[in-house]
Length: 222
Ligand SMILES: *Cc1c(COP(=O)(O)O)cnc(C)c1O
Image 1 (cartoon, rainbow, N blue to C red):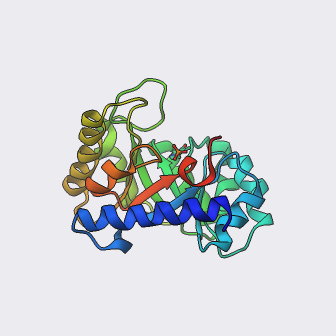
Image 2 (image 1 turned 60 degrees about the vertical axis):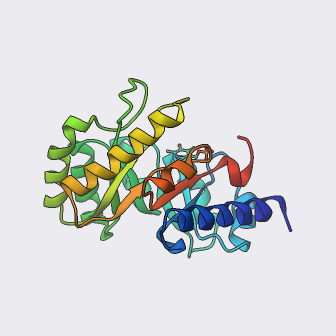
């Protein structure tokens, strides 16, 4: 078994264990393999091991890799998205996790309409209040929710966040729990919580994550 296949198996087993420990069905947590900076060969290795959902954080990198890979891969865009890259991302991504302004949301909606696609989106919040990170402040959520509900060419599915860099376990747990609370307050009918990376997905799953975004633990160090 290749290194990537072995890592992938280990991560999947750990997710199943963590989901069970939280009293949740195993398939309530989706594993997204974050393939940023890794070559198509590495992605193919994961693909051959059964992985179908992959995530990238740069529009150009996504556009360069996606056409070289099997068409049944489900691409997730998880990086900061500039307005002039939206059309490029919409050609490949079925999901955009990083919608953090009304302006960006409306642009995605309009361009999706023009392209005849209906992407799934998540609203990204910055709950750690770090100046150098993407994500909207919590105070902007009502405005974003209204815009997401008014959009016609996209499916708003839930919320996304990252724990602050180097946050301790208590802070991480507080941030992830807050995201879940905000989803149930603002959109109780929605289910998706994209939270948890290689270093903190155990906490995220305990806090209700439905999508974990894992790079290093599958592909190795970047
Ligand atoms: C890179 C990245 C990840 C994956 O990080 P790892 O620590 O390598 O698992 C998850 N989410 C986002 C938004 C990222 O940019």
